[in-house]
Image (spheres, rainbow, N blue to C red):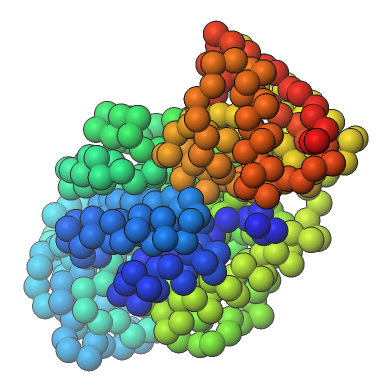
Length: 477
């Protein structure tokens, strides 16, 4: 694989059949997302089984991410065909499940009126329609439509997150998290996270069966980003809701800042929302979308996520190949060497345990050595993926291979930048591990005779994953 930035694809009606799943994986999908906001859990469990079968058939490790619904506030039912909410018009909000029209919007949120104040912005749908509250009195709130648009069905309603009394995870989230972790997904994404305590609740039901992805989509999450980075295994920059809860013009800067922090902490970061959205219906993306994808690569993102483009789009395979092409082209211009130098200077700030510091120092040294030697590959022997992720922080130009005896680790590393995973046996000594790692990589045609490679491993008697403390330089013969 020449592309290093990974692709996450949401599976839906347009892409969940066995033949299509195989085509998507061959086209470049690294992680499959199950959006639990839509459809019964049984449907997603069936999709999970089909993904596993497709990945096995293609012969590529593929991770699966189950995205929890989180708390969702919805409007009542709009009439068939929907309505137009015109800019400058006045709308009345009421709490309850009544029928909506262009003048009254019912919202299924019991404390709606108590949680609104004059000056608040209320957004309907995916952010296209916004209204500003002008008056609040007994049982109703009045608002003026600032940005109009067409709405239908039962759209979501977004209030300022700091005012809402809904909590995450919901009881439904916890049940779903336990079910999907038991079924064997590699990742569970937690929606509308605000503090580390939200993740701890999900961790209590998931245990070590799956890794947790904190979705950054509220201002509260931004305020608590440092604690979320410690408590999570990966981060998703959910730009849709983030752009509603924060000033729209701040989103690009927030994206860059979050990505930078994630790479410093050595955890994968996914950029999500509207990346190639026009390809839901069109055969090619807009020039702005192409630029957006490329900029996410330049920012240093581990992965780029597609939502409706692959779930309901008219040509999911074309969307994947298009994104792969854009990412690969952008990587050719990315300044990863400067990034690695910066990480070497700041790495001590975020790696607290002695084992982590050893791994951080070793991977820093490996990054420099690989450049000095012109190494063809860096081989990371790892149990749970920690060494490979620590190495991926430096975005090495050498191929990055992770060798693990754990199937879940092999699949989960599909989310990490540049990591190509191989499943291997368990070995009793470092010498044996290094020898078999090189031999396996040769057999798999990931490296060739005559290549110089680095092998990172743990010394005997220590946990190879949290304390990679051995680096061997090997000339492949």
